[in-house]
Structure formats: C-alpha cells, structure tokens
Image (cartoon, rainbow, N blue to C red; front, side, top):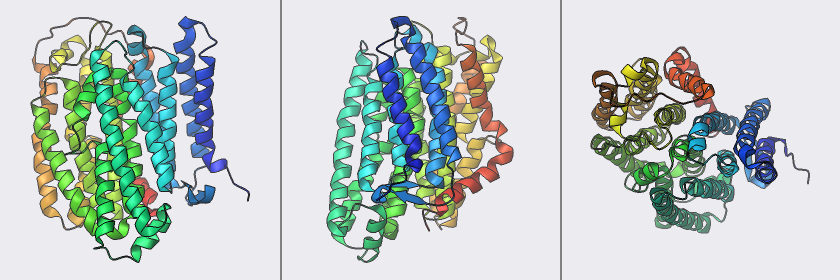
Length: 480
C-alpha cells in the first residue's frame, strides 16, 4: 500500500528540525547555543507555515489508515500555532537571556510542543489525539520547571504534572469505555457506531462523562481549574506566555474532533454538561480575578472565564457556534500572547513585573506601551471597537440562535463583571503615579512584534466578517 506522506510533511519537518536543534546544540560554543536555537526555531516555524499553506486544500485527505486527516480546519489551526509560537519565541529571548534560561532546550521543547499541537489538529483517531496531547503535555511540564533553582517553578511543575497525569488517566478511561461500546478508536467509525446506539445508553453516557472531565482538566475549565493559577504564577514568564496562548488552539482541535466529529449524536448529553462547566467558568473566573493582585494569576482566572465563553460556541451545536468558537480561540490566543508579552517587556534582570502595582504610571514612563496594553485589556474585556467584542458577540449570537437566551444573558452579565479587573489595569497605567522609572531593555524585534500584536486587535476589524466566514468554512467539512 502506497502512503502519501505530503499531508504530514509539516509535522515531519518540524520534528526533524527539533531533533537537529537538539543535536547541534551539543557542538556549538556555550555562548552561541541560545542564539543558534532561537534562529533555527524561528526559521523552522516560518518554513512550516509556508509548507502548510502551500498544501492548503478545501478537501479532506485521510491517510495512515484513518489516523491522520488534512483539512481546512487542521491547516488553519496549524497556521495559528506557528504564528503564535513565533511571537512566544521573540518575546522570551531577552527575558531568558537575562535569567540564564537562554538555552537550546527551551526551543527544542517548544518545537516538540508544536508537533504535539499539529498532531492534535490533524487527528482522526483517539490514538493520535492522545499521542499529540501527551507530547504537548510532557513539553509543557518541562517548560514550567525550566527555572530549576526556583521553588515556585518546581512546585508549579509538580502540581501540573500530577493533575495532568490524573486528567490523562480519566480521558483514557473514557476512551476505553467508548471503545468497548463501539469496537473502534477511529473517530468516524465511532460516530457511525454511536448513531446506531440509543443516546440514553448508560455505559455510553458514562464514557462521555469521563471524556468531558478529562477535556475540562486540560482546558482549565471550572471545576477542574485548580492547577491553572498556580502554574501560570510559578512558571517563568517565558514559559507562561507559551502555555497561555498556543495550546488553546490545540484544545479547540481536541474538543471539536471529539465532541463534534465523534459524539455529535450525543449532543443532548454533552450540551448539558458543557452548559454547567461554561457557566461556572465564566462566573468563577471573572469573580475570583477581581481579588487578584498578581497579574499572572489575574490572567489565569481571566483564561478560565474565556474558556467558558469559548465553550458557549461549542455547546450551541451548530456551525455558527463552532465557527464562532474557533474565531474566539484565535482572537484569545493573540490577546493572551500580547498581555504576557507586556509583562515580559516590563520585567528585567532581578525584577519580575508580576504585580498589578508594577503597571502604575506606565503612561508616564512610555505612553506607547500604555496604549498597547490598553488595547489588549479593552479587547479582553470585550469593549468595542476591538476584535474581542466581536469574538464575544459571535458566540453570544450562536447561543441565542440555539434558543439558549438565558445562558447568553448570564454570560453577558458576568462579562460586565469581568470588565472591572481589566479596566483596573488601565486605571493604574493612566491615573496613578509611576513607582518605577527604570528603562525598558527589550530588543527592537520584541518592540516591533509587540506593537503588531497589540494593534492587531484593532486593525483587523475591517476583515472580521471574512475571518468569521473562514472559521465557519473550516468546520463545515467536519460536520458534513
């Protein structure tokens, strides 16, 4: 049997490049190791983007005996992962260099994590979904613990590892029950088999519950969110910016492939579960974030609330909802990347700009960076005319279209509550006096990247309709 490996070429290329960076790191001088890995990683991701877009197709191409699928959805998610990860590497360079973390291992872990996300995006089988998820998770565990002399980082990594392993076990147990009921691990075969089973089958619902719990752990949704604030806070910010942005795109792929591609006929069951999880996430994430004084913990709870909004699009159960959820997660990744980038910008050797008070008087120190942070906070809060408003509007409209008006009202009310802690950052920057007059030491590449990142939430507004149409088209093939 002849196998067409071209759809898998980006995964193969990034995997080989990561191995090459790992090996070459052994043969260069100590002072050049970080620079080589940095340049090689950026070049690798740019080339992977070119290869992915070069093989872009509107047709579903299933290879490897049903293990791997290449379609519009996978290509779009991979392109987003490449671009976000390039931003992560650019932001983290100076931060890592000042803290003796500028080593090849960081970029190797980052590239292998990208491979895991790519595999998740193109999975058409429970096995490949799990392999991609675990490859990403193992890289994230190591990146959280990358600052080995930090007790906070070590504690965060241990918590993340233990709870991540628990979530993986729960997810696998759910897969095993589904396999017992359907006799297959192929997502399309499982979809066909479930269509012939009563949706009230106890064993099937039991397996679905375990899958939802495992997914919620990985997503950081309430009530399975307990790891997220500690991990965001304890990890070095160069790792937090990676953890907080790109993996969310892979999480969308994981959820959409399983719940829509595999368990669509159980929609009534998983919708009710997601409604509870989404409401709890939006409510607890926004309310608890108000009490935070550490901005990394605040952004962690913010992430929890955003994951609740993202789930609103999924539980709407239609292509408008799925497309809106995809658009929301892409917008969130850009906003999260920029917010953590600002934390890195304000940090310097011996000082971590992790407290809200560190943003006091930023407008006095540099009005441009204060304006960029204002755009990011407004977009996260959903204030028009930023793209964050239209991302929220897209999922709210999908929920209303699914006759869940009460749920949309609850989500909007808690979004208004959440606007408080975003606007608090703006108040500190513009209305309080600066307590730190230290100059910013970021390189020119980071300054340019951060400006593009933050301005994107405003400048892409004329193309919001086109982007939403692209997202809806990407999920159309999945739902038939």
